[in-house]
Amino acid sequence: MGRRWWTLPVWLLVVAAASAPAPAPARPFDVAVAAARLDDLHRRIYGDLEEVRAAERLNFHRIEGGIAACMRAHSRPYRMPPFASFYRDFTDADLGYGTGRMSLIDSLTAGPRRYVLNERAYARLPHPKVRRQDMAVFQGCADRFGGQGYTSVPPPGGWNAVPDVSDILLAVVRDPGVAAAMRDYPGCMKVKYGYAVGVREDFLMPGVDMDARYAADADCRRPAYLLAMRIVDQRLGPWEAEHRTRLDAIRRGWRERVELARRLG
Image 1 (cartoon, rainbow, N blue to C red):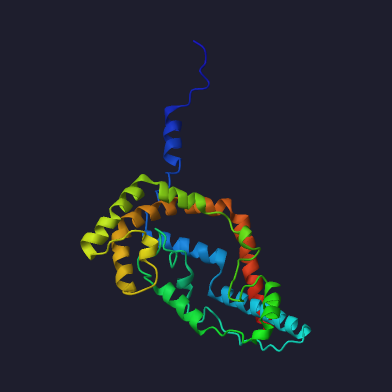
Image 2 (image 1 turned 90 degrees about the vertical axis):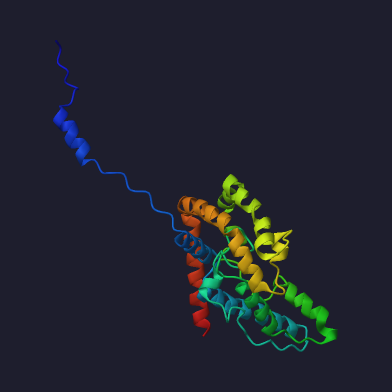
C-alpha cells in the first residue's frame, strides 16, 4: 500500500478547526444609527454648520464685493447690504439628509422645522437697494457672478464633484417590501387622520396645520421608512468605500473654506 502523505492526522484537523477564528456576528440593525450615518454623510458632502457659514461669508465678499466694484466702475451708486447668515438659526441636525427633502427616508421626528427655518431666513435677509434707472447695470453686474446670492453654497469643486448616491436611492424605491408598505400609506392617512393625500410632496408643502400633517405622515410612513433604512444601512458602507477618494477631497475643500473665512476676520 502506497504512502498517503497528503492525509492530515485527525488531531491536526481538530486543532485547526478549534483555532480558526469564528465568523464575526452580523451587526444588528439600529434605525437611529443608520439615520445618523446617512445624515453625517450628507453633512460631509454638503457641509456642516460651521462650513456652510464659512462658505456664505466667502461668497458674500466675492459676490457682493464684486457687484459693488462693478457698479463703481459704471459710476452707479450702490451700497452693499450687510452680511447676514441664512443659517443663523440652524443647527447641524437641520443639515442632515433626513430633513426637508420630502423623501421616503426623511426623518420621522424633524417635522416641518427645516421649512420654517427656510422661510424665516428668506424673510429676514437684507436685499440690495438699487435705483430703478440703475437696475439694468446692476443685473449685468450680478450676472457676472451667476446671478445668485451669496447664500447659495455649492460643495467644493461644484455640484459635479458630488458622488452619485442614486444607486442607494434606487434600491430603496425599487424594493418590493418598501413599495408594498407605501401602498398602504394613503389608506392610513385617510382612515387614521382624515387626510386625502394625492401627491405626497404637495401635501407636505408649507401651509396650514403643518405640524399635524408631518406627524401623520411620519406615522403612516414608518413601516416603509424602517424597511428603507435597513437597505440604506446595508449599502452605505460599501458606497462610502467606493467613493472614499472623492469624499476626502470634498472634506479638504470644506476645511479650506473654514480657514479662508477665518482669515477674513
